[in-house]
Length: 244
Image (tube, rainbow, N blue to C red; front, side, top):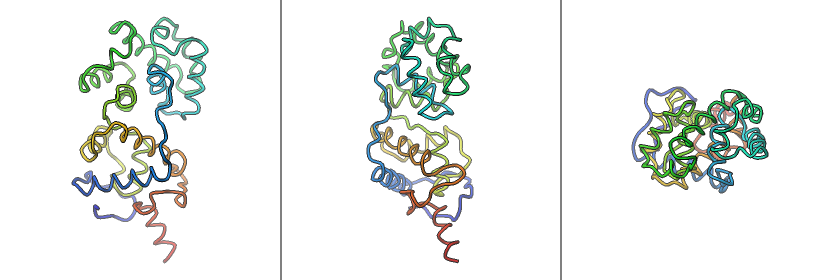
């Protein structure tokens, strides 16, 4: 296991080596033992999964579900229908997701791409080789790395690790990674230190999000409820202070 450092101070580099792989696997198993199989991504269709990935950015899943329900009632949970719909109509339906005008435009851009390039058949797009598909996704207006990797992992079933703010918060508080690290650096680090296993990547991302959303909160983390107490620098620091 890499040498631990007290507190959540930044480190200049991401740690490397076999010990990092062992530590990440231990984090995964602690979380899975606590939360079980989370069954992520919850969607009835591939189109719904991708639409949800676009809508969920910077908003709770609960509000994303409200927007998905609105789109479903309007018959707009497929890209041909979204492409034909007006942007204002789509915006009104996705109001629960915040930044709804921006997200409506992102949905329309994605729908236009799938319709013009693949005759509206999303599966044809997702059957491309991994690197080709990731590059294409990132070229669509409004599709950033996190959304692209959501689609690659949960839609196309490629082993592409998804990073988000919860990932950084949890692992930086544990003292495993620096607090300030770019998306691509951290994604590459996970990819280098974990077996490229789709179900594992699926579950690991969901587990980190569950912890960050319900326990490792931004302002007041509930450390007594955390399954990562044995590997967390923040918890170790709190114990040291309470005993001094």
